[in-house]
Length: 200
Length: 254
Figure: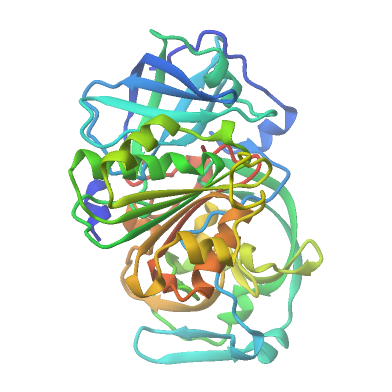
């Protein structure tokens, strides 16, 4: 039911070919958060894996940073329609984090300082698709972008990449996180344009 | 959560007809759309607007709704023209009465003020970030709410104020609404403070004391929101009571 907008020509660029539907390219790094930016001192930072009842794994900043890390370059797609291509990060793969964790859970809820949460299938955290990132563009990750460490799941819209992440709860059943309970799509695949609840 | 029930169904694209336009400032224009079967909205929510070129190329941007709920199928947005924007120059310079625009919404269930809320509210706006806060002020007035509201509105200069006459008329007749302007570049000649960014002394004099436990809504550019929320926290406000909406320099959120 497209309506032609008289007098609108728009701005096309060759880069648009690399963008998911409905996204536009930005070169800066906008910020979207629901509340104030938490400032988490490294000597109080921790990251835990739990099953909703028991803590299965726990790292403080030092033991987390002792884990093998990797550098990677990925494209970011925010549901507010900007995309940023070729961003460089350093972080610990979720494959490393989950290596020794025995679980029958199918879903995960990422939990953050500041009480943000987001849910996703556990498989989306595995197989070189997700990291706990602590450096961006060669520098320690700034607090407004989720530092000291954030989840990064670049194949989903960026709200799934929880900033200020402090742990992951493994769940047998799916449960909506913060934005998923406020009208945003439960899965959030940018290539299928799953922005809002009810989008196919 | 209350918001969840609103969004169980699909948010569909609708067609709105432009019925009125007026300039708020030299660079910002309010567009009033008539949208058949608009399901109404909650103050603070936004819409996605889609514009489509004759060859089918389209672009979508999100804009906060400026009008209060229950406006008889009318939806108002105020768009600030960004110098390198793709959509905002079109919406602020080309669109005319009678044109049709596609829109989808209302969207967002977090940065909202509901008329049932009775606690003190602190609104803090940076530039065009005032738009969703104006929807809250209008919603409060339309509902004859007496929830105590304060707006701290930071603008570059007096000519950059949106909704100036309407805000003045509201505070003239309603003593539980107050507004403090803060000028960052140019202040009126009789203004008590030199131009500058909002700092701890502005928060101390213009915002609710933190022991009133206000719910705070802060909207503006990222750096403004970061700084304002840090100041609110430092003056004793509970972080859980601070809700934010940010836009980046190219984000075209507003």
